[in-house]
Image 1 (cartoon, chains in turn brown, green):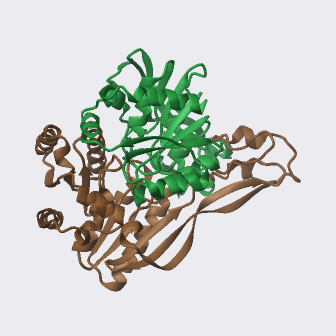
Image 2: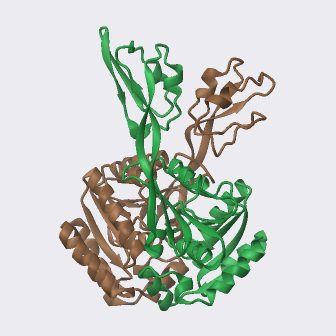
Image 3: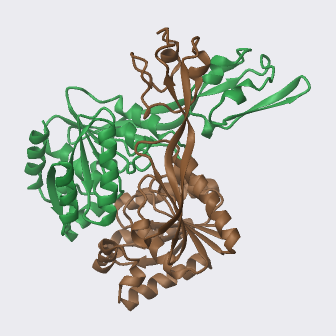
Length: 284
Length: 276
């Protein structure tokens, strides 16, 4: 089984567009949308949800005000400033450390399971899709990603599928790291902007930290050919493989607007062939 | 006054809008809270005057006091501690990346064998560009406590100034930490199904945090989906910026929108008045 992660560092460089293409090209795979904060892949792949489960990630505390003696110990101990002067706990600030429940002399702290989202096992015409919806302003996106990846593996084993394609989140933080551990190859989608280059370099460092092979695609490469050249030079220096360049295309934008994977939408033979070539190079 | 700029979806133009505000209005400071991928500095090339390390508390074990009873490992909600006991000795293993710095183990250790240690997880940089103040939070590679770095960067908000906060994409803890406490949140979106979907989520975040919000449509084109959504929810559309190769090219080279097309300055001043 081979796990392929698509990330970018910077948002909006074309991760989901590209994952949509891979979903069409690769056979025998499970697809995962691990951008659990702001998942978009379902808008391209139109899944039929087969199973939906609540995701409980840790706990959150509430104070039973009828038992509370207003001693303030919990407020003093809380490092997340989650408890206000009326002993209400702000759910978006509470990180579920549960320490208040140990120090409360009145046993007034109630710990509740935190349902921080939902995850789905779905079918699409391209194969199974494992995706999720993290609750608004919730924590534990990393744990939810780990959960999705566990399920994807089970599904792949059960159905004898060869690949897991993961559409990753932007950034380099906890959901990105949870998406990255133990994948076989990372495909980083960048764009020729100073921001794109800067953010790519942080992604390269992170992949280096985890010692995972990384390959790069430059999207919208013709928006600034000079910067594209600089990226190419830099990648050569770092001995990182550039597996393809995709031009800025109104056609790609329209496919996203229509919610159709580009390879099924476009008539542009040239672009389609370029993208198919890139897919071959990911696996080689 | 604090104005945060957020989006849900990445790459819609948060940084462009945050910079446009800071460069158009008087008495501003800009705070880059996209600590995983801070980009504002690429456009301002500020002169950095100060670099402050951001640290997180981690427990340090004094082995001579420790009885290896394992209590710290039991109470740690994040599974960041593991205790091995072999006869009368043993070891306490800390997985620093899992630790949230709640200090529970330090406070509750029956032997008082834990003390407060510190670990650097990021930096805050302070500098100046064009006479206004630039503040950046930057998370170290392989660290996860982005909200801590964001809060540290926001501790440099000056109440007498108009503080522009560039928030990270998404809807979870880092985004919340960046938007929390703002007087207004500008949501930048683009007219695609992805943009709309994530705008809805970002708007929900502002509602949860009780922060007023307005929308800027970037790469504006056929906007009816976004317009219908804003009308239905009663969210004001503050500005539309059409897609143009000229703007995209300027952005790619680190040239702020209002430096490339100075007419936009007036728009951002007008929006500020409206927000006030």
